[in-house]
Length: 171
Image (tube, rainbow, N blue to C red; front, side, top):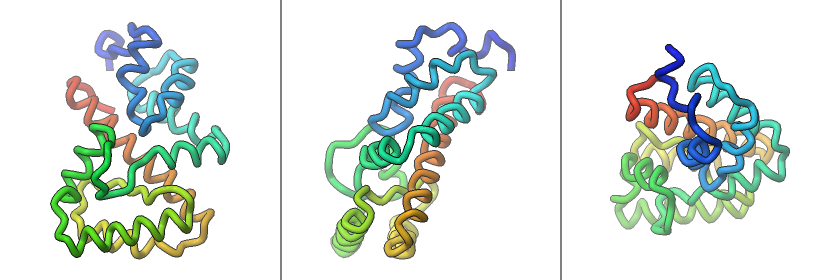
């Protein structure tokens, strides 16, 4: 990719954070810390460095990051990214029975792991999500913590690809 097609090479720190600070749910600190590692060769480099910042952040900061995510299917204030992702999976049109089951699974999961259930829902339907929730509830805590972080990185990758497509770029 030619240098002139990479808009972030000419951005200020504030512009960079305005564009990428929302990729990690309510966690602009990831973009802030990544900015310090500029220049970036391409968007995959940006994504890789963001992931590395999170992976190196330590368990307490990672837990804080996980806790920034909304419960799936809840009718609370959430970021535009989360609203769009959950609507695309049909979580805004659950039957009363599905909503009750999702609410129960969310409560059980959060009580067990102390952070909300996190899943990249793009391309999945409500029943698939409920099935995955049931499978993951009860997993060993360390395994589920790692799975949740992995899902966060997948979500961010999908968000980055969506942003790139809007800009006519590729990741």
